[in-house]
Amino acid sequence: MKKLLASIVPFAMALAIGAGSASAAEEEGGTPHYPINKPRELDWSFSGVFGTYDKAQLQRGLKVYVELCSACHSMNLVSFRTLEDLGYTEDQVKSLAANYEVEDGPDGDGEMFTRAAVPTDHFPSPFPNPEAAAAANNGAAPPDFSLLAKARYVERGFPQFIFDIFTAYNESGPNYIYSLLTGYQEPPEGKEVPEGTYYNPYFLSGPSLAMAPPLFDEMVTYDDGSAETVDQYARDVSAFLMWAAEPHMEERKQTGFMVILFLLIFSSLLYLTKKSIFANKD
Figure 1 (cartoon, rainbow, N blue to C red):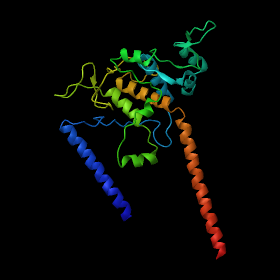
Figure 2 (cartoon, rainbow, N blue to C red; figure 1 turned 120 degrees about the vertical axis):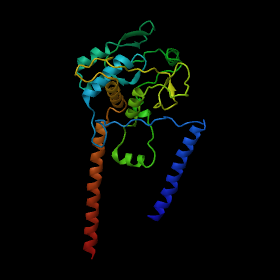
Figure 3 (tube, rainbow, N blue to C red; figure 1 turned 90 degrees about the horizontal axis):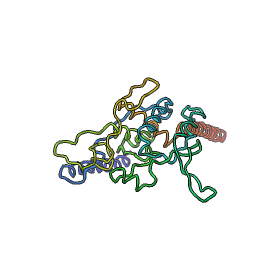
Figure 4 (cartoon, rainbow, N blue to C red; figure 1 turned 45 degrees about the horizontal axis):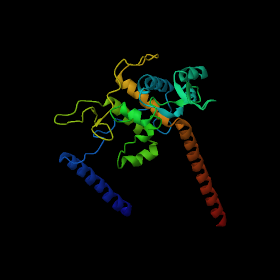
């Protein structure tokens, strides 16, 4: 125990000193630590060891993505047919896919052509290439949404990350996306941001970003009577992006629980067997 404490205490002190140095650097005009504000932590239905997706929320999140986000952001790794997992019928998926056009070919003449998408296609990009995407968005190409909820991970520091291992914490991405979407504000007095960018203390890469606030109240009409507010839109689309990044999370958690249960039973049987064998030798 003494050796363990001896190894932990210096590590904790180093972290504290590092945090103090970062704060001091920011106050002296050095490089600050981003995000400036830690992401807000929400209570998600899929959090915890036994968490599951709320399909009604995922359907609302898909609606927000289709009506507001898909004009700039692609989901190149998500196929339309996987939307059946959200509770949509095959005909509904076909109808949604038909609203998009994808490039196909070559045809008999060796030419590429466009056609209406089918369920086996993936959500297409709204731009022909990354350069065109950047040119249309103040020089910053909008990121693909397929794995965004897993890619935007904000570390929670020591000792919290240790507890996260045992609680199956994987909500960092959705928390970050929600905080970013709802975190736009006027820059504090004396703080200047580059022209054409928008101050957001939750942004990972700096105090401002090129994307203008994308959500406003009553932009999307919900069929189930849910609140049509920025807060609700941000929650729903964040949950949807979590599903897009990890559609098999529920199955993974179930498998993991069964494996742990098996190992516990197997270990108990091994212990009882060992005890019985050595008892007979006496």
